[in-house]
Length: 131
Image 1 (cartoon, rainbow, N blue to C red):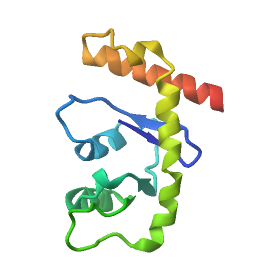
Image 2: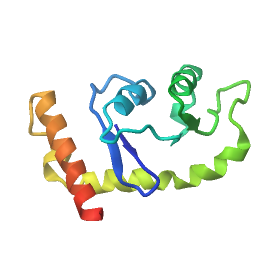
Image 3: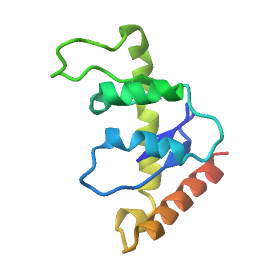
Image 4: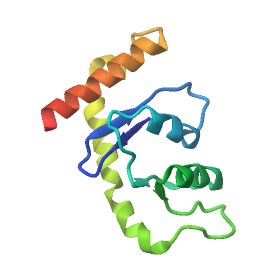
């Protein structure tokens, strides 16, 4: 899981087991960010449409922007915010940059902390190349 800023630079990353849903990893990833301040807005796809996640992020002062899931009966997302959803490609670009690292594509590390260290190192390399 990774979080990027408005310029497409990674500001947080984290790892978890494959069985956990991404929406449950958002708060933990934001707590492990590289920068001091929290982002004001967070853009995600339909998988992040959750009342619990919205409440947790609102308590932290973060506004979640994601389209409503097709199974949601009552629409909760303000449609005026959805034009910002077009910028979601920036996080996809971060993942493309991270997948250039062979060490991340094929996970050679058996220990999670070692793999997390290489993910953070790859984020640092992306930041150094782009800044």
